Structure formats: C-alpha cells, structure tokens
Length: 282
Ligand SMILES: *[C@@H]1O[C@H](CO)[C@@H](O)[C@H](O)[C@H]1NC(C)=O
Image (cartoon, rainbow, N blue to C red; front, side, top):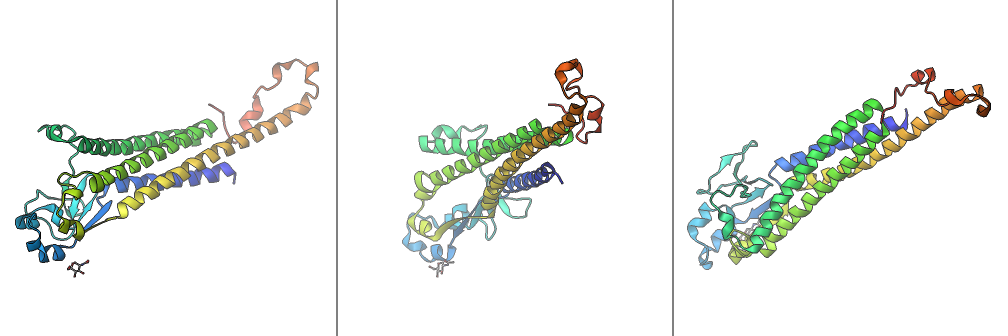
C-alpha cells in the first residue's frame, strides 16, 4: 500500500476523533466540578454572619455544581430559588450569561476587570467556533484532495487542521484566563474572592472530563495536521516517481532529443491514461 494512502487514512481518523472530542467538550457541562461541602457550611453557619441562612438554601453558590461553557448544572441537590431547567442530559441547569445583546445594559455597571473577563469569555467561544469553521473547510479540501490525489489540496488540509488546532488551543488558553479571573482576581459577587471565608474553605474546584477531552481533541488536531502534511509529501513523491517512470518510457524512444523536433517531448500522451493516478489538477 502506498504511504500516502496510509497517512491519509490515519490523518482522517485523527481529524474525526479531534473534532468529535472538541465538539463534545464544547457542548457538555463538565469543565469544572465545584464541590461544596454543605455539611461543613451548615454546621458553621452561626459563626459566619455574612452568610444569609436563606441564601444557603436558595443560591447556586452554596450547592455542588458542574460548569461548562454555556451552563452551570446541579447534579446533586439544587437551589430552591434559581431559575433552572432540565438540560438534554437530565440535570438541572442554568445558562451562563455572555451578555451578547445586553438588553438590560448590565455590563455598563461592570468594572474594568469584569469587562476583561467578559471579553475573554466571549472571545473564547468565538475562537472555538472559528476552529470548527476551519475543520469544516478542511473537510472539503480533504475530500477534493483525496478525490484528485492532489498534494496541494492535502497540504491546504494540513494547514487548515493546524489553524483549527491553534484556534482551539487559543480558546483553551482564554478559558484558563477566565478561570484565573473568576477565582483569583475578581473581588465582586458572584466570584470566589467575594465569598465568605467559610464558603471558600468548603468549596473545592477541580477540572472535569469535558475539560480533559477538549485538550485531548486539540492534541489530535495537531497530530492530524502533521499526518496530512506527511501525506502531502508522500503524494508528491509518488507522483514524481510516476512521472519519472513515464519519462523513462518516453526517453529510449528519443535518446538524443536534440536531433529530433521537441514538440513531442513532455507531451502527456496516451501513456498518461494508463496512470492509476488520473489527470493531475492543481
Ligand atoms: C465536610 O465537612 C465535614 C464537617 O467539617 C467533615 O466532617 C467532612 O469530612 C467533610 N466532607 C468532605 C467530603 O470533605
């Protein structure tokens, strides 16, 4: 089997795995697992005057939750007063507000830091969407490249997959930026630095599976880009070998081409139709 066929198949598999993983991560709500030890908070509630006892039953902050790019979900008990709905995977969730249209103009009261976080969060979503767009275009250049066995098209596919990888990695970077702002920098509600120390001590945040498969998807996109560029090199080499073979077949007929009219030289001729690679188009 020619090397281009093998690398092309592997590159395609990697690209499919990558886009599947990144889109599952994009759509699921398990980027962070935010565990609240409610037993501990409840036991020490009297010693924490800044916590309103009714908030403890009503506000999402006091409940164990998972956080995705678009939703916060409550897999265990759920807060009484939050406006929740059942997500496609049957957990109670609320949406994260990106203030896209900002009808009630909440963002005008935001401080500079909050605005920075919001811009980062919006750009993160935008980077992921652009990365999906690159994969979509890569799909079509890939199909064209396999169909016509064109090294040029396969090279474009490699570049597009590399761009998809870089943009989704950029999205991951911004996600970490938002995480840093939410947990270490912002001192306003509802972010961590504004909580009562009791709640801060009873809450532990850890990465969850959506986050991990997002990074794995980014990695597969890189591997796929490398394999596509390898496949492009293979295709080019195979084509050159094929052309050399055709040439070798032509050469003995005209051993000293200077003595003959040159119009026949290099003409693709009937030999070309015997080629398994079909007509070459760039
Ligand atoms: C939660 O807090 C209680 C009381 O402080 C403690 O006994 C328990 O071990 C904690 N649970 C977890 C899972 O940390």
